[in-house]
Length: 120
Image (cartoon, rainbow, N blue to C red):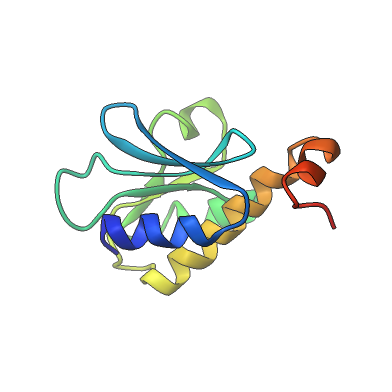
């Protein structure tokens, strides 16, 4: 996945916003909360960081091309960084990005979810 593909995909998810911050990282948010980060890899393939369930985190952190996300995982958060597609092809990455969006949206207040059209 290249940066343009990543940004185009994240833009299709409901109620998202995009900002470039933290040294050029492309950060996608839902309701003001981060659900995906890409960049910093200095080339190809694109490094993509996302939130996942505790079970997925336990499995994914052991797979080639994936690692606990720097900074986030060291603070006890279940975030993974895909550094290569060795064990996670782009289709699977898109599924995990969808799930990350869902997990973050669930943590928003009911009122905000309703306001963003995410209720239900």
